[in-house]
Image 1 (cartoon, rainbow, N blue to C red):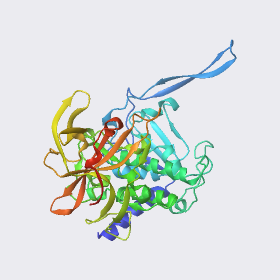
Image 2: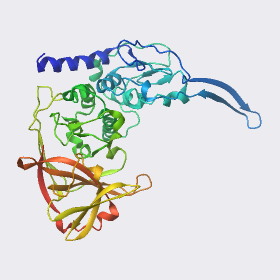
Image 3: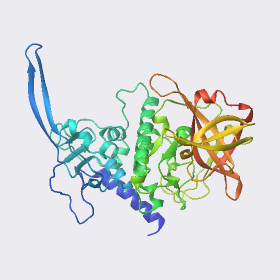
Length: 424
């Protein structure tokens, strides 16, 4: 199959699931020979509703007695597959057969045998089958569940052309912010998912990306968005992913990472959706060059894609030393300038293993979090860049560092200057 046919196949599969009346998910099946059913077991959940009242206070309410299903990693066999996430998000309605119960998910409701209090027991359903994410990507009128009838099939082609009608938004800017946050939530789960072929990392999420682009008009850049590019750079892998030896995308995109089996990986973490982030005033995107493998900009990209960014950076005059450890933070490296300690960063902050002592690293200031009652104490975000091997004119992303604001206020900015970097 040539690349053009292969890309067409990826788009077709997204359309198939998006146009389906119902998708059946055999979550409990370990392989294609198992079928969708699995015998009930001791972990099977159920719920009993008991009407109750309080004559003294004239209260009437319901008491729920529920046997919660205790999900076990071995019960979830396809939840770690990358293609499955897209298929479940694009499908208007999904019936999920798990080891402990059967669940229903559509764009307006989620129900389970264990009842409303037991819906959180399906551990892998928060994003893959989440009504919240589906309702943002595919706003509909009416209910797929409450009237007891299935509404007509909404084809993906027709839905992509539907105008977004915000309900509780004061303006479209707030609508777009929520859609972007939804995207980052999806990416956090999708990034570490398993793929047989690393090059499928972009195609396996292309259908969802096209939907968000249709809603916002934003420009897609190998897993990131041009209109939110600085926030898009603020991802941090927790666990054991490393830059893939096979080119999948530029190092500044999360698609470039190669993940080990999911049980060895904690997460892919997008900081701006968990904290109130403010982009640095001196950050400027000077140029973006994406080399696409086909005419479809949502599919594969080729080597040579680059991003040129300008901002406050420390790339000279510092040393890294004194690897220390404590029980709470783990291993840390300390940076010194003129013999004075400036800031520390965790060894796990680097995307690739190895000592930073003899490496030519640069720390680029992307922005900061706000210090208020909701978010944690304010922090500075620093993107760690390293000279690209064999190419003195370009850089690769090699890590992401957060520095407490109190520490940053004591950093000697004499060693920092506004510079431009091209990283690939």
